[in-house]
Image 1 (cartoon, rainbow, N blue to C red):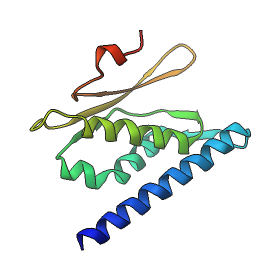
Image 2 (tube, rainbow, N blue to C red):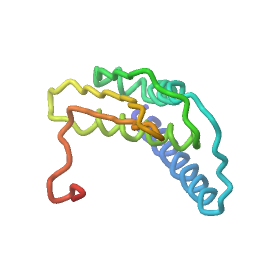
Image 3 (cartoon, rainbow, N blue to C red):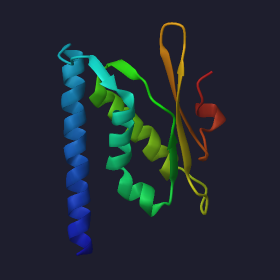
Image 4 (cartoon, rainbow, N blue to C red):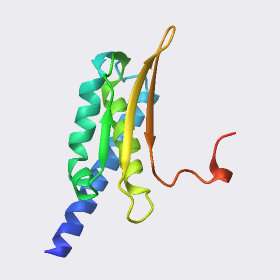
Length: 128
């Protein structure tokens, strides 16, 4: 049973990599279509996709009211999944992961932020 789970997990990772490569090729070719979408629904979808990990690690994920945005909802969901997932995975042992997603309206745009209490980024890898 353990080996079967490893095979399924590896297969899912391979499928995700192939989908990401296909999506990247579409971006390169200009085939990705932008649209108006509810960022709250996108974040909810990302949380749902990570529900097993969130439950397993007893993570606390809070989300402010999200705006409607113009862009690609699929790319936004992948970004949110990646940031939430990393906030949960990269923790000090015994720490309860806490992730907060916020939205702040600016003059001509929205600032979407993701904050967590994880281990952070080593200073020599941080952007200056």
